[in-house]
Each structure stands twice: as C-alpha cells, then as structure tokens.
Length: 116
Length: 150
Length: 330
Image 1 (spheres, rainbow over the protein chains, first blue to last red):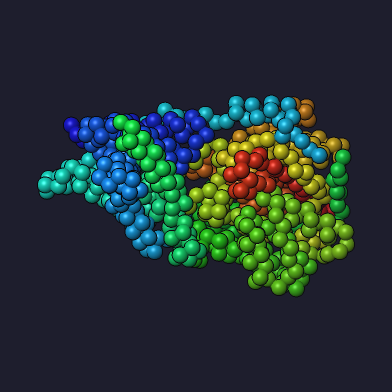
Image 2 (cartoon, rainbow over the protein chains, first blue to last red):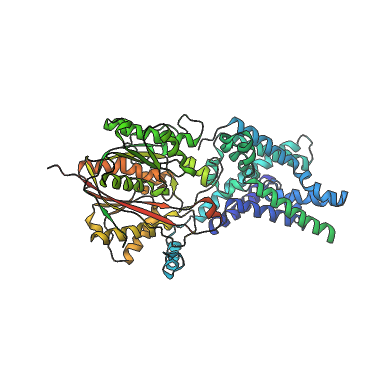
C-alpha cells in the first residue's frame, strides 16, 4: 500500500509539473525553483509533514521536499538557538543531501566524459 | 530603418506563429511524466522501507534514501543514461531529487574541459544554485514568519 | 531597392562535407564525404571535434580538386561559437590568408557570396568558403550541458554536427550567377525555441528583393532551398509568400532534408552546417548531373546571443541568397 501511495502521489506531482512545462513558457529550472518555494510554504503552514507521513517517498523524493527540509531546519533552529538558528538551521538540516550532491557531482565530473 | 518589430504587420505575424505551432501531445507527455516520476518515488520508497527494516528511524532512512538516489542519478548521468530517461520522462525525471542531482553532475562533466576549478567546480551549481538560493530564502522567510508570529 | 549582383565568371569547382553520426544516419547519410563515428571524434572537447571536422572538410575539398594551399587566395569561413573559434583555429593549421565571417546559420551563403564577388571583381582567382556547426558545442554554449535531462520543445531545431567547404574559382561544373545579401529583419519574435519563425521574415525579405531586382518569379528556379527554417519556419515563409501573391515555387529547406522524423530531432536541422553540408553533398551533385539546373539557396541566420535572449530582446535575423546554375556542356 505504501508503495502504491508513493507511486501515485509522486507521479501526480510530476504530471502537474509536466502540464506547467507544456502549457506555459516556464523552463525546467523555473519549475524546480517554484516547487522548492511551494514546498517551503506548505512546510511553514504545517501541511508538508502530513504529506510525507501519508505518501512517504511520494512526497519526500520530489524537489519540493528540499524546501520542506530547509524550512523545518529554520524553524527548529529558531526554537533551539533563536536567530542564530535561523541562519544555521536550514543548511544544517539539508547538509547531507547537499554534501552528497557536491561529492558525487565532483567525482562524476572527474570520472566521466559527456557523451552528447 | 527597418522597424517591423513594432508594426501591426509584426503583431499579425506573431499571432500566426502561435497558430502554426505544432500541437504538443500534452496528454502523452503528462502520462509519461506520471509513470517516470512515480517510478522514481516508488524506488525511493523501496529503499526507505529496506533501510527501516534495519531499525533506522523514518527520518534517518529518508536522508539515506535521498543520498542513495543522488548517487544513482549521478551514476546514470555519468553513463549518459539520465538525459535519455529525461527525453522520455520530462518533468517526471526533473522534479525528483534525481533531477537535482543530474543538474549538478551534468555541468560538472560538461565543463571539466575548462579546468577542474573554474570549469568543473565553478559551473557545478549553474542550475542547482537557484534551487538552493530560493529554497533557503523562502525557508527563512516562511519559517521565520511562522516561528515568530504563530 | 538594395542591389542583387549578377555574376559571369565565378564557379563552384569542388565541395566536401564531414558530418556527425546522427546526420550520417539520416536520409542523406550516404551522400556526405565523411561520417564521423562519434561526436567527440577522438578529441578532448566538443570544440576541438568541430574544428577537426572543419579542417578535414577543407583538406578533403582541396585533395578532391587536386590543389595545394598555395593555389588559394583566401579562406572565408565561420561557425556559431564565440569569437569564431572553430574557423579561426582551423585557419591556424592552413597557410592561406583567412577571414572569419559570422552570419550565424546564414554563414555559408554569406561566405560564398563574398568569395564570389572577390573573384568576379577580378581581385582573386580561387577562394575556399566554409562553415561548421556541432550539436554538442552549440548545446553547451547556448542551451544546457549535454548530459542534462531536458525535454526539447516541438518547435526547436536540432543544431547539426557538420562542416563543409566549397572551392570557388574561374571554371567548374556549377556557376554562381546571382547574389543578394540579406538585410537584418526583426518581426519581434522572442522565442529562442522557435528560430524558424524568427527567421522566416528575413528569408522572405531577401527572396522578395532578389526576385524583384531580377524581374523573376519563384517558378524560374527549379528549386528554392532555405537554410534551416525547419518545419514551423517553412510554414511561416509560405504564409508570407502567399500574402504577397508571389506564388510558392518549388520550396524546400535544407534543415528538413537532414533527418527523418523518427530521429526525434523535432523541427529539423539547424546550424551553419545545415545549408553548407546539404549544398555540398546533395544539391551540388544534383546540379552537376543536371537533375536540377537552377537552385536558389537562401541560408538563414538568427543574429542573437545568449545575453540578448536573457535580456528578453527579440531575435533579429538575416538571409543571403545565392543562385547556383548548372553549366551546360556546349
């Protein structure tokens, strides 16, 4: 059941994104930015966590989750350390994924040649 | 001076261009995006469930899942496979975290020929950079409003 | 009306083309002189691969005609990259005076036209005109890294990997008989994914002036070939021609001849290489054999840059027309 929910919700987010790409002048980069901002907004409103709880990876794999993680980091940071936490919290929470992207990106850039 | 670009003739022409644009098979594209995006999320759920079977908490397993997907996407991008998936999947392969990873790895590979520092490293975030910037800015704004006001 | 030049003494002696694997798999695949095995062509960057293709096409053309570099007065060549790096660096390996010429995708007929006038004017005897483009070089420079997963728009053309060179001289099987250089035309189109629509008014402007200056009709040519308008641009050109009651003639587009529809290249081939390679390997043999006698080639170019596109400016375009005629044996 979890698998089905993840597939359906993740698929729906992507399908909605495709409609935006095909029906508007927005580029893929625009779309990713919009999703991150939407994820952040939903997170601040307390609406993103229920999505992750219900749909699992269906909500946590789309890039909107990145906005959610950053926002949770800021809010947890503020609760714990005040304004210092606002600056440190977001990146702290997202650090693992950013680290992975930089390290794997660097390694792949050294190891592989583009094929075109 | 040729000033066609502001003439009524040019406006008529622009309208005609819109009419003559080939129709995009939006239905087909959306279906493909749904299947590809759904499948990537399904793979994520499988990885997460597997990790949790070792007793990892949902949150930790979630982070490991993201790292695993970033790795898989980096590998597929390196092997020249991810862009072929994207040609088919469109938004379905762009929106998941694998698309974020692809957007880091692809320029790193492409600009390696301009050097390891100003090529590979400097260009790495040419597409992912805006996502991080707007993610952090909106997280700070929305997070702070929520924390301070409510 | 700005001039059309009619020429008596300029001929195409020989041609040669080198194309990429995707182009080699297209409908004209067997006609090109060289189809390279992969886009990188044994080099360490796309830019070096493009340069190698251009050098090879020029060298091949000289060999086919049996000439040495000393037999030429000038090379005129261009490409799409910043500072014309393919043409400039190719010229580094050739001991022949050189001028790099930029006309975006209209470069081929611009170099042929200028070379032809230099010969007709009596200043030069033999000139090489060439042009190149490379799919990955263009993607990297103007769009996205090649391994980035993006879906192309249906109106977008596919920059072709191809280089071609032609030798212009004072005798040969095909004569360069008419030259009309393009004005820069801008109908306000801003969509960089629909360059065909931006360039169609430029092709029409040059075609209309060419025909009016000479008192001719489209039917006077066996074939009128635009450079890389692609499917959408060609439809727009037909609209413009229909509105002006000039009649359509036998219209084709080099970009539409390069790929077949199953190759997923959307609106067709584009780039300097499109008109250059299709002329060199398809039209030139047709003219030589007499299958067509009079060809009007209108290479089309979008004269914009990444910066102007990001600053939301519209796309100025141009087109240069050359009439090639079969020399009848008497």
